[in-house]
Length: 294
Image 1: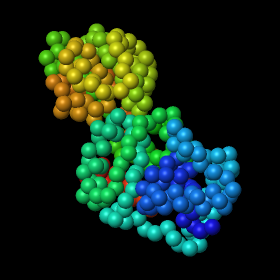
Image 2 (image 1 turned 120 degrees about the vertical axis):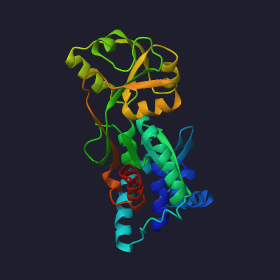
Image 3 (image 1 turned 135 degrees about the horizontal axis):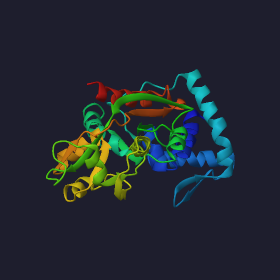
Image 4 (image 1 turned 180 degrees about the vertical axis):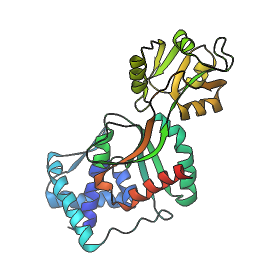
């Protein structure tokens, strides 16, 4: 049993995919299949069964994953086979969980930077959800970027920037001009975007604390089409500042400061402590943090 077979087992277990395991290990799909065949013969078990949801582990594979990962960690430390990550030569896919704010504030700059320094690296984005902590822990995602106060024990974090809020209405709104007052805010009909990581719960809590009731005419699950919606109606929406800046670029709208102080949210990148010293993960974190220090 050599180290590469154990690495193949671990990567297929994490990704539930032969092709993704090959990408991450820089191995051909056929080589991954051959390695799986050797593993199955050695353990006398199918280990992974192809289903509609990918390569699912058998009960025996589930019992093997913890000792195999311990063995990998020990072997890599003893043999020093964990080489430094070379982004210019690497062929792999990073999987990042993001909120809508991160899509707007980070993704374009990240893609441009990767094309310059790591042209063979690809990125796969998934949305922040209740499964994000488990995905980070299992290695199914490399990073999570956004406003995620629920990530606590077992996770590292680094603040990228602070984010305040703005109120957005169409440019020629008949009642809201260059200044927004409390009475205007309470009088208008509002859109509320309920996507995770938008800070909308904090806004609602603060409005309740201030005794401000707003007329919520529409609730949306995400920011998709929000610019066109606001630009063609008299609705008002309160969104993080960077979302407001993106809406200003794509729609005929204007952004105004809220008529009262709202909480500031911290946008952070999060990773599991298993990957604190992983060279590839460390490199990706440094690229993302550098984008906000420039």
